Length: 330
Image (cartoon, rainbow, N blue to C red; front, top):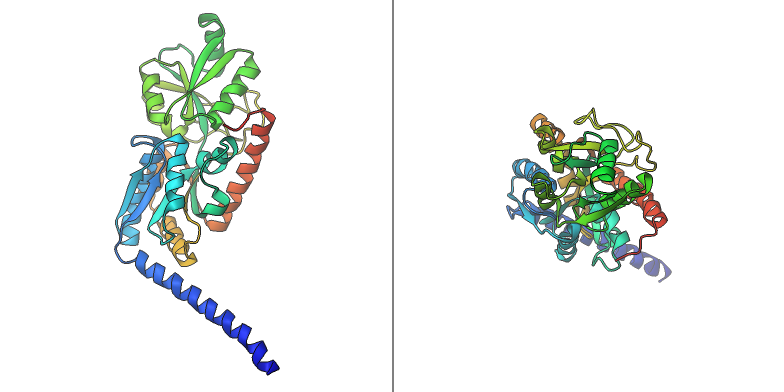
């Protein structure tokens, strides 16, 4: 009788384990059945994240053998797309391509974002880092940050606005840092994404903007805007002549933002592994790496555990900056 009582919990544990394994294999089979994979993007068509998603989606389709459909759920700095991911079934049919703003920053600056990355999402893999940069429009003569500051002082009475892709974002905190360091009154002008902000810069409606390298790089190469400063511990390979904010006397701006793919929490590990392996194969393709590099990304595959560690470290670094700025969650 004693033996029987001891055996029963073991049998139950084995049964539960077999059930979980069977469920994972069932979900994996469903993911391989030809059902399209939704790749959510939190920004509009034409933005940097959208171009990256379409580049990866086209190749992932071939590797996975199923359609990969990029779905733009733009608005609120990726918040809308994140809530869609949270409400999606954990069956491997919905993924979220996101950068640091939605995952690391939004939960710290919005009181009720509607999602918690730590409990609602699971990282699949990381694939790149990038830099946020300050760019000036063609309507200013400035070719450096110092020249832009001098121009604001002499031509604008020391007051100006700088475009940012979303409120309460890293670009907004960078605007405050610029204002504090140079003792000028520059205020952030929030947009719904980098595409409309860049359009206003090209039309000389605003004189400067802060966004990612992929958002500005093509117009920078064409001479339509000029990138004048970049975050990071070292200069970005795609813009080697542009100094870092650290070189210009700013501190605590060495950690680079990231790009990665996320799935709803509860997605079976075999499916996570399958997508991670597929992404690694895509990133190894020379044409993909070259295209993403040209966009201003530093490409590098990070498996689930390594990427999760990067997200934690980055989130903690910006938590200190946000708290020290005195910012109150919206």
